[in-house]
Image (cartoon, rainbow, N blue to C red; front, side):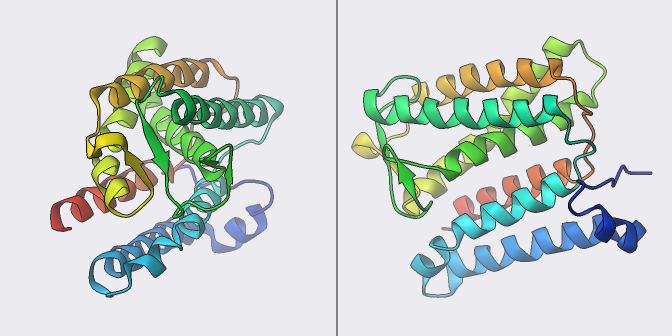
Length: 226
């Protein structure tokens, strides 16, 4: 049976829903992304749905972390460190071209600090967490799990990049995505995944595989069709 224990804030709701909590959460996730998919490709008003991207990301994170098993000090520290490392890696990248290459953020991801949207830190946390959870199920050494999870992050970024540049999430100097972007992602992601594997909190979340799959399919099919 899947582990569907929820975060303390939402646990009474999850208990009341019982076995329906996970299917309902997955359905909400799929519907919200399906609406975004239609809106960005077929509504005739893609800029309106681009502005909903922050809400989409916040909703996805709320659903995901509602199923996290235990909000202990180790998890809170992990979340804060990953958010900060992800965010400041992007600040470094935007201002120096190091790690990822020369790029800049558009307006679609909301409020910026030092020219980087605050939600980028949350996105790094979400991707690190879901891929770490997925790889934790593998019968591998902890460092091998970390590498697999980092590669899963880079794979998702590979499909995100063309969509992001087309819909004003961010843009690359010269219009070309450099190989340094993926190398930078692999370096930062590996560091974060090594931390994930050693952090002392439960590595189980029934929503994690669904969040990764929905994100992957969303960007894959937009990239194919757009």
